[in-house]
Length: 257
Image 1 (cartoon, helix red, strand yellow):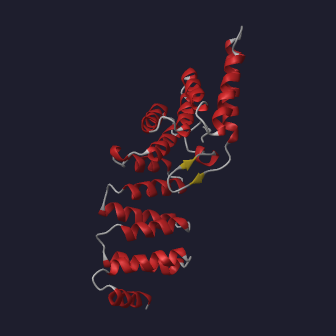
Image 2 (image 1 turned 90 degrees about the horizontal axis):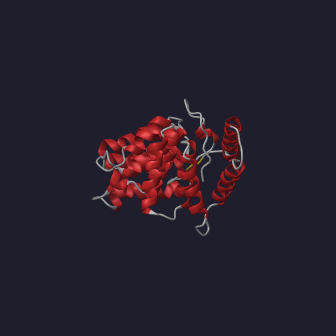
Image 3 (image 1 turned 30 degrees about the vertical axis):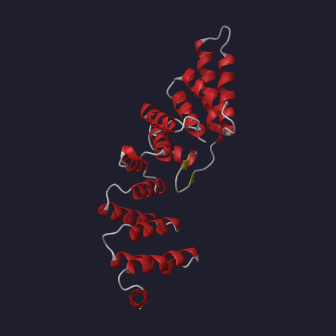
């Protein structure tokens, strides 16, 4: 009954383009939190224009918003069947994979985005996931590409530094943090991480045994990992915490901005 009513309304208002009418109904229903109406409207929009990606993308987003991650994945894959290079679908699918704790699949989704479309958020998110998978050099490559787009991005600089630290490149990590801390309005975690590394370097002055050096380094890693509490996902970026760090076969835990 609801579907028939929609078709009648669409034909009356805009017989040449019912898909737009259905999308408007769905968007308005979603804004007013009438989720069942929004879902039905988007489904009818997809029926009206099965060759377009807007309706299944909207269905994926609304399914993700209400926690129906399996359904969201189905809709994002429908989008990719229509346009296998859709950045919106690939980004949303990657986010959905993380919510489903399918981290390897999330990496694959990011890697499917054409390199020419790799904006800072894509590079940062992919770098974080690669780091957590232990692929530090690949992660560092992502952060450096992001910094080439925005040299003053302190989030990328911090994440690159922590990646370098976990890759036993302490001096390079120190250099990146020091430069990032000098940028006005840099994130507070940067100065905190910098202080931790500089305290560690200061403690190495004088005669220090190899065993003590190793102990100090372990202590540094623990302190840097100590601030992680939760994972928060936005539409464009990932902020990493213990939940995401608890990936299978991953030992290191990385403090991120």
